Length: 109
Image 1 (spheres, helix red, strand yellow):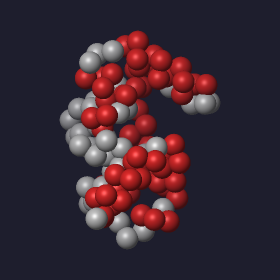
Image 2 (cartoon, rainbow, N blue to C red):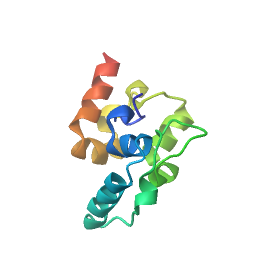
Image 3 (cartoon, one colour):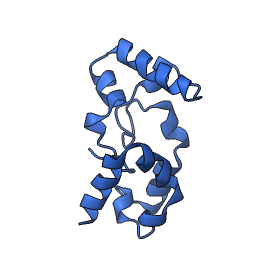
């Protein structure tokens, strides 16, 4: 499962911590996020993927501009978008996760 932005959900620490019911990992991730100025708790880390309609999603999914844009355009990932290369919404994610960008580029073929 690849998220709209290109992150492989099944390799994501939040996804894995949720699936493994690993509260210690969630707290570790939340602490790291707080060090970067984000107001996140371990409970905010629970996630079953941003594409799920009925499962648990990380709190950020509700305000994620990338997710909202892809859903509005009815794309399964941003790889389908002609504007992907210059998209400011993707810049932050891809700056911190080069693999996510590579995943989208691979999907584009």
